[in-house]
Image (cartoon, helix red, strand yellow):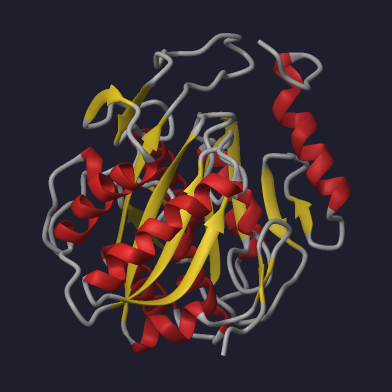
Length: 339
């Protein structure tokens, strides 16, 4: 294992210390626990938005805490869920009387702990909490209708749900409407990824799986969950063709749709390669008469040093376009108003 760390058991606490020291004007922590982040920007009467999950995915989850997106985040060890107590501490810190919305990925540990935190917030603190569980990974399960339980994993598409819900809360929408926006964005986003290499959890000290030189795995999850297939590494255009065809069929996306695009690096894929990928995405969407409203390219949801990437498409209507368009200021992501 070759990493710039000290003791593996101190990796997360030292990472968090570094983030707080780098951004003291934007981030603080609650309950004397480094794992309980919250924004220093407070607005009375605004719905609070909280998320959380395992470390190892920067800038997901904690990197989107700030103005225009999230208000708080509970973070666990690498690929491990935060505790209900940590989530409750974040909830209490960010509540300003309008209630709190939890937005998080569809993983059993997170669901259990967030549900318990919501019950504790209601019973102990009289804080109203609603939840939206995001499952955008096309490779992880069959599609479901809008009213059925989603069994898919939550991956990079979480970024779009944060963006839209955060903008809705900044507009001072009430809790029911912020949740409605988050649900709409969640239902209309689709993601699929491809992995070229594993990653190493510091406490473990070795890769949890192997991908041979010259191989790739289409549809692998951000923790190394099994994908759709493993085979020889294909040229970039062919990789995009395979992934995007499955995404487009899934919603399905149709001629005349308008979309936001996220090409997301998983930790060790150069930006140059990500733009090669986006080039092909644009060509395919143009041929399908699907219009690109805005594009994001870079590392938005990583898996430590995993080589690979994902593609996310969010189908837009006028309301989601307005919310995508708004200004954001967080430590890891900044956006001026687009139009």
